[in-house]
Image (cartoon, rainbow, N blue to C red):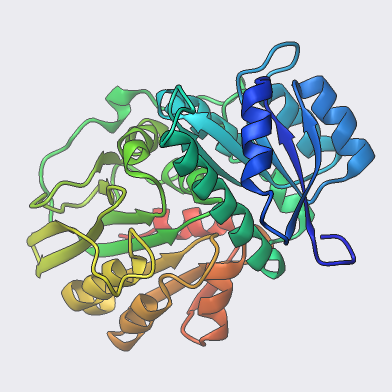
Length: 360
């Protein structure tokens, strides 16, 4: 941020209407200054170097230089937080951008007609103001370049095919691993799930803060990444070893039962839920079901979701792992757990994947 405390924002979009609309969304937001508007990636790179904005909003489909190329060059030369603005129809492109290092995303429909334009404006303003509040939580600038192995664009790393994640015979899970993640979480989760073996004795439950139209696609990407069978959770799903579930957006997920009779409940959020999906509820339910065999993992993200659930896991004798500031894109959630004194292991991302892969 500038010395005055103002967040300096660069808007990148090939549509003049979209650029004007997004700029107008911040007209009454005193904490944010629009320092430039670029129509393509080449112009955006020049402006980023010249203006050194605190934050960039990025459309992915642009002439001359698209958003992916822009991201690669920007984050290698001048790491800057980027929020992608994309449509629901571009789900795969959004995840590719997140894997390349984008901080977060907001969604739009194919048209910015009312009321969709109002919804997009509210989303974007909320994300930018959230970014302002989290400035002290952001990891080192180099973390904005952190890319998981086997990312989109790296042809030298093999990625598992859907057949590699085929469903196997039911086995009761020996461990319940409940994972909380938010900003920066998708690429971190891809890294972790890529290391999990088919022989794992654990079940993996994920509360990733993400819109509802994206969680199914994300679960499919996790399933393709490695040997764990991953799906978007449905109410009543049976939990087994070597299975993974992603909580649907706009819902909360809890696990119930014990031993070989574990199942999921997918629930509407409560008025008391500050975050949706709510990681606290997921981790606390894992503690109640698995006790000392519950493992809570708190990855990168803004805020403090997961802290109270992790506290329940520790009280039940389980393990709590927090991603270290060394690799966390945003240290907010793991940092809050560390400060609360409830973490048994604070590990960089690569070691978290290795730890979980070794579970019986």
